[in-house]
Length: 170
Image (cartoon, rainbow, N blue to C red; front, side, top):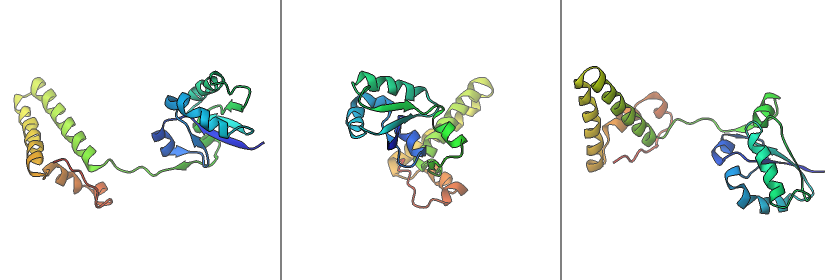
């Protein structure tokens, strides 16, 4: 009997690492998407996989609730993709990319304002000036389309390896 892996993790988890040839039907959309997918898997042995096994068990229950319990041969792959990889079986994974410049600007600005506020309230009120500078840069970016924080972050080594990445913060 032909075997197929049904991966019930979310799309971002699946994109990060999955078993070659597996089919992704996220548990969050399982009730809507699974009937069509399961119909195409009749006569095949289905291994249901998630990260470690819990969501796969929930998907197995839903298969019965959807009326496919007696029609498909399905079982949970115990331990999920973590166990699969631990056993040295092949996993397709994407190489981690640095955050986009837009996200780096938001993260840096947010953390800078937060740190300024904490320091301003806790240690020295002059720290509030850093929050004001960050706010001024973001306001100017909105007016002019040129973000100084973006330019600073773009010059960092991990961003030089990915030319052409755009922030569009203004």
